[in-house]
Length: 237
Image (cartoon, rainbow, N blue to C red; front, side, top):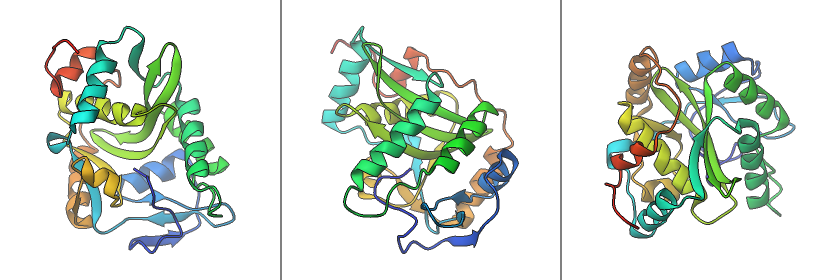
């Protein structure tokens, strides 16, 4: 799940260039722990980083300030988590967020129009999902991910308000815990993800995990407010 890494970084794991971004190709790639990552003007670049950054949902670290933010969000009548109600808006917001973060850097966003179209198609096929933070009827943050069976691959996140993307990630962790999903793929190491409990594992071990999880029955991708109990027991703000 990106924060500061991009296709021009010296990360280990570039496997191939070229190919297509159709649903079948993407499913085959993710099923083999491979993901596309490239910038405008480049061919499609296919990566499988080694080591692989993953978040064991049992070890998700809810720091004090985020715990307070999640508690306020949970108890507010104006706030809610939704799944898959605004996927196209979520991925476009992620692309805009990355573009804004890179202002002046010249790298642009890796969520190029072809990627947007490809993941929208993957969403329509039932394999890409958005986790959305809503406040007063407005989408204020979120993330999108790919899911095959019970293998979950985090992709990108955005915030229009403080902590809105982190709250969406916390909601995804709750969903995963409630549905016996042990890991969320984060692709590459960033300090932000490490601070929340993500850790590296070898590509070989991660591939073994994917091989098992991708063939398990997929959960129903919807959020129940009771899932918050996976992180925080019910209590007044």
